[in-house]
Length: 584
Image (cartoon, rainbow, N blue to C red; front, side, top):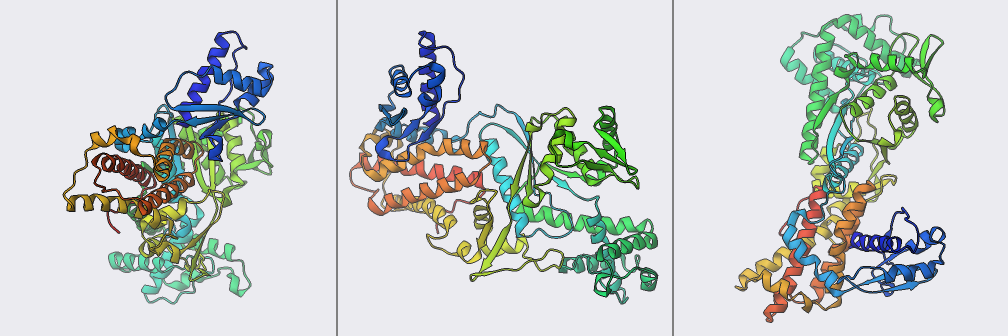
C-alpha cells in the first residue's frame, strides 16, 4: 500500500505538470507509515520538498496535490497537517483487499520484480579454512544467506559465493600444526609452537592422516628443531619462529608437504561445507584463491595499473597510488622480495567479479575489515569501475552468554564454541533468527538461555508459536466437523470490524513494503521486527476472539484472515530460512 500511495502521488504531480501548474520535476516521492494513527495510515512530505521548485507555499502545494489525486477506492480521506504534510486515511476496503491477494499469490506474496533481474554477487562468510566455524562466523553465514534471499525476493538475480582463502600464510600454519600433531602420533616428542593452531580438530585431522598414510610423512624431530630461532615463551618472536618451522617443514617434506597441506585443507573445508549445509546456507560457487592466483590474471591486472600510471616503485616494492582515490595511504602490491601482497590478489579477484558480468558486488565482512573498504574502492575506480557498484556490509562481533556469564573464546588457542555446537544447543531456527535480529553495525549479545526458552520472551519461539496456533485452529475445525469456505470468507470480509482484526489486516498489508525495504537497505532485522509485530497482533486477536463461531459468514471471514496471516508468516520464515512448526 505504501508504494500504491507513492504511485497516486506521482500521478497527481504529472497531472499538475500536464495542466501547466508547474514545470516537470524529478523527485523521489517518499511515503512513510504514520507514527500516530490519529494522523492517518500514511504520510508524505512531498509538498515541502517541492515547494521551492514549484514556487508555492508547502500547505498550498499540498492542497493542489490532494485535488489532483486520482480517484481511489483505497483512500478514504486526506488532510494537510503541520507545515505541509499530507496524511492519508485508508478505507476499510484497502485493508480487506490484502486478504484475497495473499490467498491468491500464496508464497509469491511479498515478492516483486523491482530488481529487474540485475545480477548481484554476494560474497559472505569466506572464513579461512583453518578450522571449524565458530559462533562469530555463524552471523556472517546467516546474514549473508538472508540478504541474498531478500534480494531474490525483490527481483535481483543473486549469486552466492564463498572465497576460499587457501593460499595464504595461515594455511601453512595449519599445515605445520597438523604435521606436528602427526609426528607426536609417530612417537616423536614435540614442542608445540606458541602461534600454531591448538584446537582438538587439529589432532583429529592428524589422526586421520596417520590412519591412512601411516608413517609416510615421518621425519625425526631433531631434523626439524635444529638451529631454529627461539619461540615466544623462551624470549623469541612467535611470528619469526612459526615462519621458520614452516620453512623447515617444506624443506624436510619436499613435494609431500603439499600432500599434507591438501589433506588439512580438504578436511577443514569439508567440515565447513557440511556445517553450513546443515545450517541451511548454500553457495553457488566456492572460489579457490589458490587456483586463482596460479593463473596470470593478477599479473595482467598489475600491467594494466602500470599502463594507467596508478603504480610506482619505491624501496624495491611496487605501490598502488590509492591516495589519488581518497584512501589514507598508498598500498603495496608487490613486496621488495618479489611476492605479491594479499591486496593485489584480492583486487584481481574483485575485478573478476565484474568481468563475470555482475552489476552489483556485495562483500559481507567482519567489522575488523573496515580499513579495507576505501582501498578496495580506490582500486576499482583506478580500474575504470564505478566504486558505487561495490558495496561493503560490515558485521560486528557476537558475544555468547550462558547463565548471565560471558562465554570466553579464543580461536587460535582452540577454546571457542563452534557453530555446530551452538546449533546443537539452541537449534538452527533460533541461531538464524538471533543472528539477523540486529543491525549489522550492532554487536550481538547472544543469550543461549533465552534462545532455548519456550516462552514469549524468546522471539523466535514467539513468532513460530503464532504459526502453530493458527494450525491448531484448523485442527479444531476438522475435529468439530466444520468446513472453511474460502469464497464465502472473501465475500464477507466486511464483517471484520473489530479493532484486533483491523490491526492484523493493517500489518499484513505492510509485508511487501517491509520485504522491499529490508532488501534494498540490506537489513534483515526489518523482517524479524515485522514478524514479531505480526505475531503480537495475531496473539492479541487469538486471545480476544473466537474463530469457530456459529455464524458461518463471520467464521469464514475470520478464517480467511488467519489463513492470510499464516501465509504471511510462512513467507517471512522462508526468507529467514527457519521452519514453520505446525504444533509446539
